[in-house]
Image 1 (cartoon, rainbow, N blue to C red):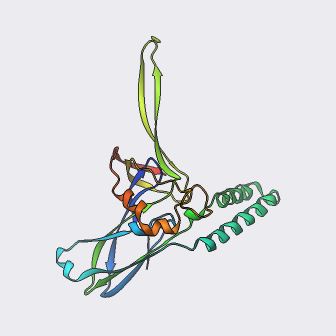
Image 2: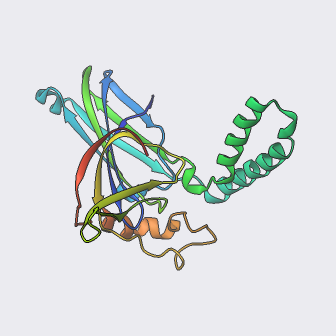
Image 3: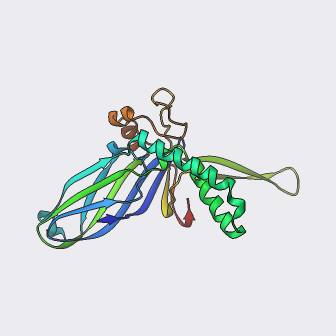
Length: 244
């Protein structure tokens, strides 16, 4: 069954990337219940994937259990071929878009521009899990994973407001969050942490600056482990009606 757990919290790192927390309430049938999580970016680190079951009825703990998780990333070569074809098609479409009506041309241009910025990190990974239920019931599932994408980050900035006397001023500090990935996060609780993703120039194999480290780095698990243990949380607040 396809499910799309809501992103409830996003802890963003100043050096890029973050930790995603998602949650969903599920109804279970007796037997094996297989679920496939949608909208999981290929930039997530399989080593960091974590699923926890929260029992609505404490007595269900003896009857409902997590049986198995199936996690994988899309093949890089195949994904790159698809991306290259999309970019080529977008270029061709834009060159002939003058033949469209203005309204249609604007829609086509928007879609094509999005394709031109698409990278491996905008592809989708596989995150499935199986719950074994000895009886029917409901349960809350909480998912957590590390997002290794430099296109999502925060930085600080200040604004100096000079008073009318010309001698004094007020200084305001801000945290500016940027998200240039192909995924959006609406109405989430934001956290800010200090963590720098290791330079990828020494561990990548021909991927662009914004892509995550190579598969070797993933399966060593070092980046994910360091990120999940990152200290120095700045502040947390709920951002409503905010599309990141």
